[in-house]
Length: 317
Image (cartoon, rainbow, N blue to C red; front, top):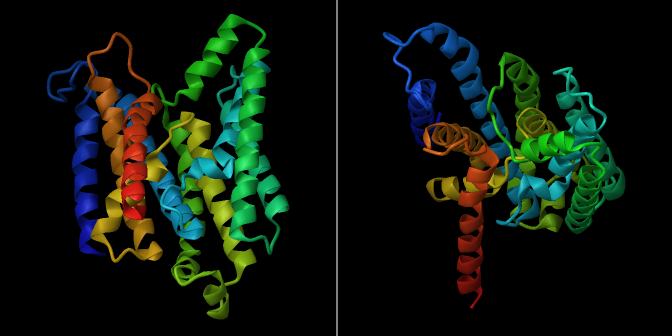
């Protein structure tokens, strides 16, 4: 284990312990009534889910930036997150959310549909440019269809539910959400890890990578499945949580050798830490109602994105 990963694990353990105590009412295990139940049924699954979702988004962001060789790449670019959101919104539209399992299943079906469409358009030999354009098209189509479903919502209550869910949050999540997201996210990270050698080869250029034995079709397959599982499972249980995959690789990169393979593990740990700390923050902020996690991360991510653009512009000047 690298020194960076050890430090991140220590910070994650510390943040996880604090997250179990943080809330509108800080929990004192020795004196708070029903402290064991609150910890076991509310705080613990929420903290574990924050780690799972953040790790998946962080790893996906690192791999995407390495594959596209674009520091502004984000998992939402592939259209998988909008596809998962479309599936979840459809479950609200059809009034199927009374069954707690149907919303995540619809979201995963939406992510799978986006993955299949992306693979069909890009093909086994599709280049990076075609892959990127296909992802943008799918994201645009899924966003338009999601807006259509919202505008055709059968009643104001359904519309409110859809809009609230799309903001992204880990509020009131139970162990059921953890059992849905954790295995899929771990499988997705394992798929993303299979692309590590190919990503390092791509730093020399696509032609050189092919000469070194990189197989574009296989790399693309692992990438699509990995991003689909990590991002799709996160959206299925938490809604849209943006900018994590964009910010995390930039936070980690200065502390590594800057090779894509060196970013995957630390980015997963940093993503877990970022989402966990942000979720703890929304619980303790003095707002009338709990601020949605997706909103807080967008408020952090948008200025970060602007800073990246300004830095890139100065570098090109």
